[in-house]
Image 1 (cartoon, rainbow, N blue to C red):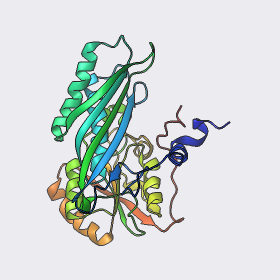
Image 2: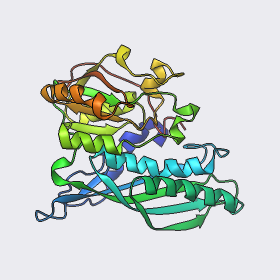
Image 3: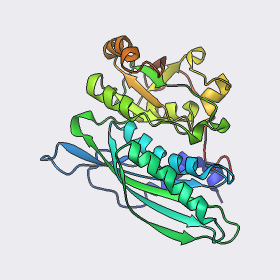
Image 4: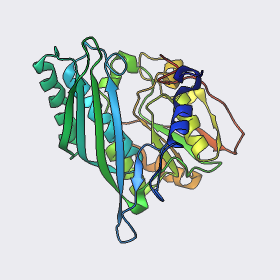
Length: 300
């Protein structure tokens, strides 16, 4: 009998989503950074839906600063809205905790969530609490709604051969604490979709080695990258930049003629955030291959 470890996360998602009814005509179904619902032709905006979960011992160490964990729990979802060109709105938080969890820890957790919600103009709408058996890890589940203007929506699937590949910021080093203190690239994504819209975009949560092939496959493309061009976080390595994961930077593709404008403007608009060209999309079945990155079930 096959196990989750045998097939991995992507194959599992493909198998289980085929077993249930899905929304009729969604703008983006399972597999993109967010689900997208279309209210109808009379609406100028599309609704974004996202859910995410943090598990103690997997996404954070149990001794980690609770306020930083709370920030991360919300910021991961905000980052996904940004990757679609959108903005966050209303959040639902579910906590499943051991009964001996300190009240002070939970309060600090929510202070961190509040920090991130306030910074990005989002609000808490509700939630749920539950007990887990003694000795079990704490679980923080976040569900949220967001919005994106219809003409500014970016999916993973719009890339074309020859499009230039870019990443924001630096990659690698998440294990050193970066994964608790990242800034979702909401402002940068909003500027991109308004001034030089990418053809495909996602946020880097599982590592470039895992996420770039996903974007290329969604676009029906291959890819070529220059490993020497990767922007490595100080103290990390090129290997870490490729495979560590939890960078939460933007990875996007852009038509070459638009990329010229982008490179001319970026430093003036975002002087403190590097933007790096790392390669190009190629034809289907062409180009490089990558392995590694984070897979929940391969790592168990």
